[in-house]
Image 1 (spheres, one colour):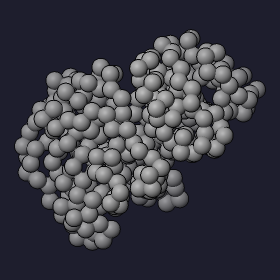
Image 2 (spheres, helix red, strand yellow; image 1 turned 30 degrees about the horizontal axis):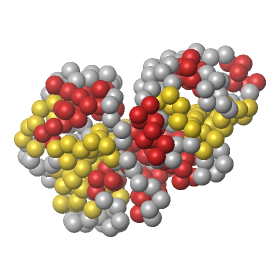
Image 3 (cartoon, one colour; image 1 turned 90 degrees about the horizontal axis):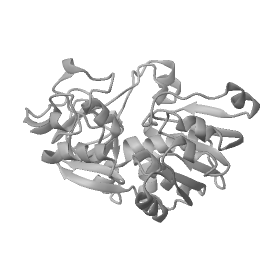
Image 4 (cartoon, one colour; image 1 turned 180 degrees about the horizontal axis):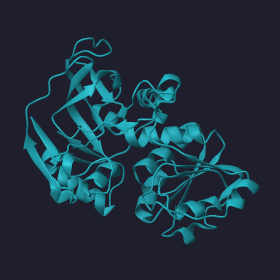
Length: 334
């Protein structure tokens, strides 16, 4: 079978298409014929050598968290899925024994990690992490859900966003940002979305963004968005300080990323005097993914798929992601 492997951690030129034997499932495992795999900035960081998860000793490395396809084979003891089932993978990897695995939520697992291996014609996965797709959910649509939409949905739940709330989405034209805007619309909350691109903001408005705001720096954000109940922040960096200024008294900010930097400074007194809540959030739970599949099947959510690529063009997919000219999820079809 073919796979798009990271042969060198040097950015898109480090991707090579290779042949290797197809995997064979062991007990509790399944092999999936991958129909679609979306890529994320997480994958790009690995490819650029900017991830503590992967180094030169792990090469060649096959990334790809968000795969959907059809079950080809199952190992002994697998009852949740069967060959022929169309499925999407929840990419969470957990130990199954710590207090958070026992009592939840699973994404707090003390040994939490993520699946990699979807950028290939076939993928070997933990069968219990597969969610069966109803007929109403297309394979490509399902592949857009796991990382971006799971993360966004879990952030909204952590921020206690409800109908009538006003929420600021920083970097709203990226994968997680677009997902946040769409899911805020599902919940009946108002969205204020920021971007540096006027053209992308127009597309965001078509998806239900109530107040698109073009800003190109944290300083430009200050005073541009009004007061909000919640901030959904995947940018990090100094946008964190600027977004705190927009929170109403008792407001909530959920942070899931560091696209704009991993450091910010703020006045600690602002936190306790204004009763702010600043909350970290990573990915979501398998139950979150199952709920998202239900929303798609019911016609309440239509994930945005952007550019689509053949497996041979995986390097080009990452080059396009690096250029930041994309809108919606980029999908690779092995």
